[in-house]
Length: 156
Ligand SMILES: CC(C)(COP(=O)(O)OP(=O)(O)OC[C@H]1O[C@@H](n2cnc3c(N)ncnc32)[C@H](O)[C@@H]1OP(=O)(O)O)[C@@H](O)C(=O)NCCC(=O)NCCS
Image 1 (cartoon, rainbow, N blue to C red):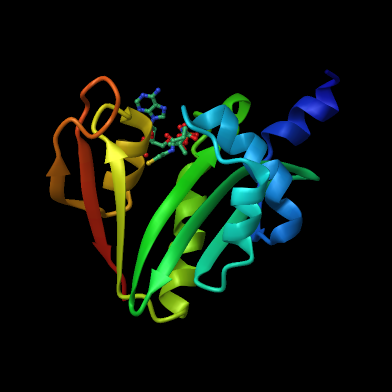
Image 2 (cartoon, rainbow, N blue to C red):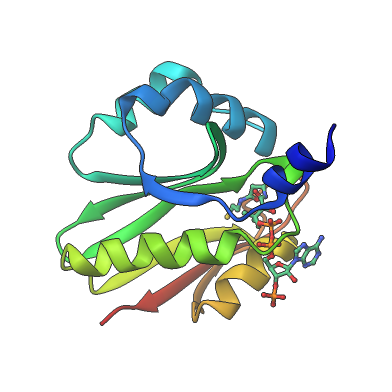
């Protein structure tokens, strides 16, 4: 890798709305980020769903992160968020989440919910830093016995 390409790959990504054409790249990143990956058809189905809001993080032409929520009335549930494994630990997840939350707020969302594995330290830190608070706990929800924390953040 040249000095220039190393510099460019460390530059912060740009955030924008994700659409059906991102399905393959999102499915690939999802598969590298979660035990049970979504296949391309599942992702495509979400991206064409009018109740689903999705954003992507692009480093030049490479998809390096995404986040997706489902809207229901004035609430939203974050379905998934991931940063590409090679780009983690650079503080990119928070601006991606903030961009997404601003967009949800602009659409009239008043409360955002999600579930996270209690042992997923980067994700828990991300959500805590962004003002999410625990409102529920599902013991033994994940394989291995970890609890799912149900988190909420009010918007606006
Ligand atoms: C969760 C995820 C998006 C976070 O992105 P990231 O690039 O790893 O994390 P960031 O560098 O943006 O840092 C986010 C926070 O986690 C902390 N963090 C990062 N790596 C960490 C680690 N290995 N252990 C503990 N905390 C960590 C950071 O310090 C930061 O907290 P701070 O703002 O209080 O300092 C990313 O790890 C990921 O894609 N994980 C796999 C998919 C996943 O689990 N998604 C969440 C499902 S609910």
